[in-house]
Amino acid sequence: MGDRKSGVAIVGGGISALACAVALKERRIPFTIFEKEKSGGGKLRTESVGDFLIETGPDSFLPEKPWTVQLTKKIGLENEMLCSNDEHKGTYIFSGGRLHRLPEGVMLMVPTMILPMLRSPLISWPGKVRMGMDFVIPARKTGGDESLESFVGRRLGRECLDKIAEPLVAGIHTSSPDNMSVLATFPRFVEMEKSHGSLIRAMTAAMKKAPPRKPDARPMTYFMSMKRGMQQLSDGCVRFIGKENILDGVEIARIERLPAGYRLHLASSSLPPAACRLPPAFDVVVLATPSFVTTELVRELDPGLAGKLSAIEWSSSGNVSLAFRRIDLKNDLPGFGFIVPKVENRRLNAATWSSIKWAGRAPDDHVLVRAFVGGGHHEEMVSLPDDDLAAAVRQELSAIAGIDAKPVLERLYRWHRSMPKYTVGHLDRMAAIEADTGRHPGLHLIGCSYKGIGIGDCVKSGFDAADAIAGDAG
Image 1 (cartoon, rainbow, N blue to C red):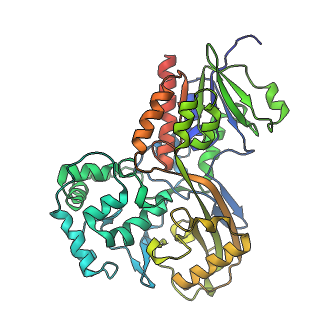
Image 2 (cartoon, helix red, strand yellow):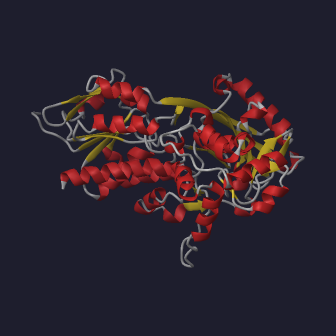
Image 3 (cartoon, helix red, strand yellow):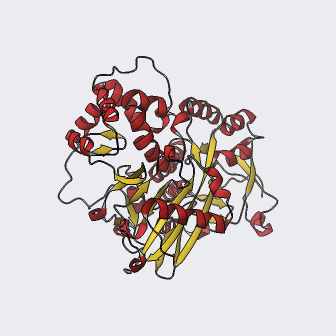
């Protein structure tokens, strides 16, 4: 077969890889996706059980980050996007033995409306006064990174950190604020402090300057999903790029640098037929794998790069979906669900009323609930036996939300080492990783390990890699 090279190799089959492939397909740049699982899509998996539609991973994306919306348009699924049922909108926080509604006007952790915060029993009066001191506390004079715990505690106080910031952030990042890099996770807050000297002042000004929605614009809610679940997005990508461009059930063990291009080496566990279809070399390799997998793929190629990648930490999480008959529920389920601060020392992190938040998730006479464990705290919950984990979740739902009914359906899902932790110094690590990667022309690293954990960030990383590949080829 000589030294013939064959386009782009994309290792991994998650949404980052699929987005990259969609963008390459648009540019008519040949590629092949190598996915060790029998089905791609990464964490975007939806399970249909009778009339229930259950998300095993993420249930939504943020249209505020436009790349996911752009992807749906590219693959012809724009009309399949689903708004949340915002007539039920609201987040509740479990504190002091009861559920408190997150005060109106709180943007992430920053209050932008005074009266709702003053009236809320969630934060004590000393805590409210401390939050208000954000207006007068001077901005940090020294540069460099700091933990989110340090940043929020310095600007808004400990009570805001414990009761609002920590549970909200843990739900997004499945990590703890005590070592989370504020520059890597919330750079906007750092800029707000620099430009306005106050988070509250800056956030209020930003809301006033926000452009009004165009009358002919497609309706969007803060969270968006897909009508048939988030797997509809990844399945749509696969249809667009063509299954003939995907080799599934094929695990790559390492990559080798050649005088021109790269060779992929199969893991011994891969199916023999795949080896017959594996080209001898590729012009470009895109590694859309978690950093701990990428570490092993490049260890022989570049030990220094592998060492830097191995410094990225990961957390594990799990979720349990339970369905109840509406008639069996004694209490109303408020808002979209609740979050639990770590200081409450509960075994549950959060719960979403899936069928209240989204249409088409359960029959009208049932309610589908999704409960979350692990991540930022009590990560040992993820490894409990099925019966013990399900029983613990039911006990927590009873204690927190008064759900004592017997579920008619239960499904458990575990995601081991599923979320990277952007710890203090993450941006410096990324700069060093990019410098090392830059010494290998045609090698690209994409995905949630590096520049953003959300679906939109992952899609953008795929688009950016495709842009770079097209630029090099142009």
